[in-house]
Image 1: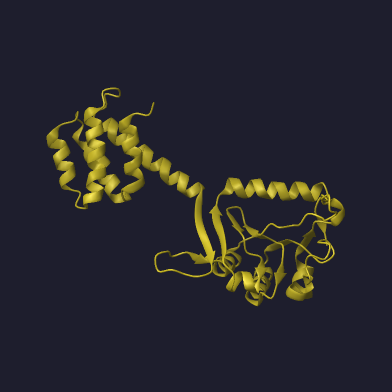
Image 2 (image 1 turned 45 degrees about the vertical axis):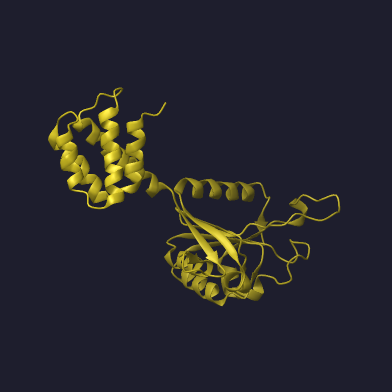
Amino acid sequence: MLSPLLDKIHRAVGLLPAPLLRDFSSRLAEANSPYTEVLASLILQSVNNPRLRRSVQDVLNAWRDDRSLNWGSRELAAAITSAAYAVQSSQRELAVDLVWTGPSTSSLAIRRTDQVLLQLIQDCHHDLTLISFAIYKVPDIVQALTAALDRGIQLRILAETPESGDGKIAYGLQATFGRDILQRAQVLVWPKENRPVGTDGRYGSLHVKGAIVDDHHLFISSANLTEYALSLNMELGVLIQSEALVTQLKGQLESMVREKVIVPL
């Protein structure tokens, strides 16, 4: 069963700004004493924001009432510092942001799909993978990809084509990317003969949309790489910073290439 004190520490670490957390733990460490009303009062006097003061008060009250851990102020300070470090490390390893295209509201500030894609391409250092069902009429993306190739990044494109998709896509990649990008990129398709077929004879679709950037960023979206998807449609995605998830997805794609599930165009 989780100690009430540990629970309050966890909640406080998620709420309190880093400078306030450092001041809180420093005061506790310097006191080097068991809980006293005087110490609690001195600590609370340094917190002006009512909401933050309540969080600090919750920790102090749980420390006062907890009989299972029998901590002094130094042990409490160490626990707060350790919890803060764990949260910061977790945030560095995994961060998730919403990405949106569609009607905007004043109450929600979310980055647009086209803005996120352009930023990811511009910030790419060594390798970029783009995956989309449909790709058509995205001149800004094409310009950014050309610049990225010029500075030496490795570009991989996995996409549906009129041939591989059994006619579900009307336009080939040449219409959007031109010969320059296609000759410098690794272009992969999922051939019809490698796809499952339904009882009605229809083939499965390559319906993934997203991007993998370097070793840390993964973008998953409902949006195709098309003019409408990036400017007119209502689309939702997530931008994820996670080395572990990027490594996992890259491994999946590389396995499909080795096993010839997906093949060069």
